Length: 402
Image (tube, rainbow, N blue to C red; front, side):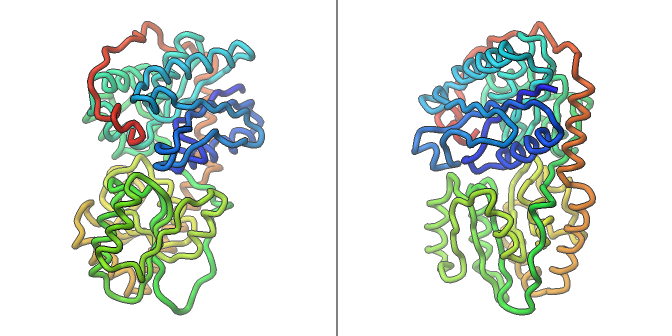
């Protein structure tokens, strides 16, 4: 099968989308499919500092095409970049026809792919992952209309869990039967537990985008009151990196909290293995790749009762959960998981067993390929208006946050 995968973010960008993309691409290539990835990227140094930037690297067995998001970088002109993606997909299809188009993220990549599918007569799949489901469409009428059209007309709309699907349903009115639940996944061959330690401080770990929407600033405030012997590593880059480092100094945490910065994906398994507890005080997820990586690495999980998290973490069963934004509760939970060795070990063991059983990329990759097979040869939706009135949107001023 010839597949065009359209990604909003890929390495060197730091994002759950990058991780999802590389693992799916590896599964598709290993299954013998002919895969082309078209990926947006930031070339502008100031914007690249938030997520990482630069042309996407080569992927074995995959044709990789990088498209610099020139319109987005210039003035939040997402429409200009949508046109570039459509033109690129069409040119590759003319060279050798695709059987399936698969977009990651509903806007702008999903919108571009739905329009390309209509034009080329090829079925398409759209994965709703993260911000596109949480807030895209609540920002302005332009993006709301685009998201509604994507969700109404994609051949299949993949989403990580029931809680996330219900959030999108409540906000955009998408019927629940339009969603196909495909959970997040992790490469359980790469992410494995490290050697157990008999002594030393409990090593807390935050990995991902350094962003207040992920709760990283809440975590720093909470750490001030955490009892017991602990250290904390914050891994990654993001829009609140400067704020987090400044807050660490203001709170007097420099001796116990360190920032390890950007981490190449191949180095990440070793980072997990060097820690004991994964802390993800996030406000919302599509389906957290980092939580799954931590589970597969044998870490105990502390997170929040947030959309996307409650689909895989259950309080006191395979992790600890607090309400998002509740700093006092987060401090208490951190103290509990630091000081109670038995609880920490029990949660880690339960999470590891469930991850290997349910969230391996081997199984999830097969599920996605079965969806492709069901759609192959079908006709995409038609009659979708390509034009949408342009309305003011906060993401045009800060498009890197979309």
